[in-house]
Image 1 (cartoon, one colour):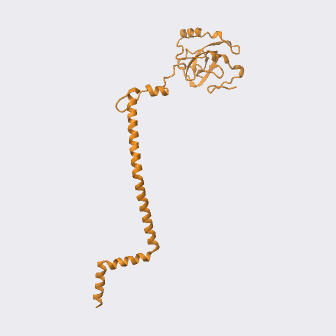
Image 2 (cartoon, rainbow, N blue to C red):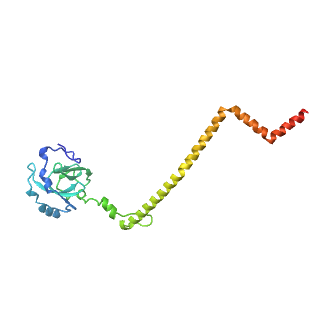
Image 3 (cartoon, helix red, strand yellow):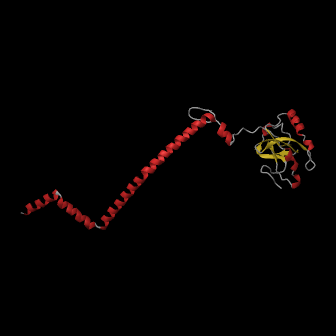
Length: 231
């Protein structure tokens, strides 16, 4: 069967080492030299655990999930210029092809970690959600590197100002928009009705214009001139 997303090698059910998970222990740092490695190995007492498929368990300190862990596991050969990790699915230390290692040999024993410190470097410190809220630095235009105790107040005040500003804008829009929309719609309707009336009754429009001309002073002058010419 194939277990784990980091592994290309295939393992059968017989290859699974169930007992290794009992020795698994998270640590902050792996041994950085042979002396510390021997001390930690002796303290782990991996020789007291039962072997897996006839292979004795030995001390390992490798990557596990997002940290580092000490574990008693069979010595395997890591192949492919990559780091190693503990895969709890098969209970073994296997290749981690997501972490290439330029300084690693193409093939090396899984417990030979002292030679490849880049594979066992402590993970970078990351902020959890709570840490981010409580202790992550904040930056603004005037001050840099202020802790949450100082900058949270600024953020909260700014957030309050933004909320008030948004509320004022919303209230203004809701107040002005309806009358403006009504006036625009009314203008469109009136214009449309006038245009339609002119198209339907062109004669009425001409009569109306004649009436206006007769009532105007200019029309009276023209009429007088015509009478004089006739005489």
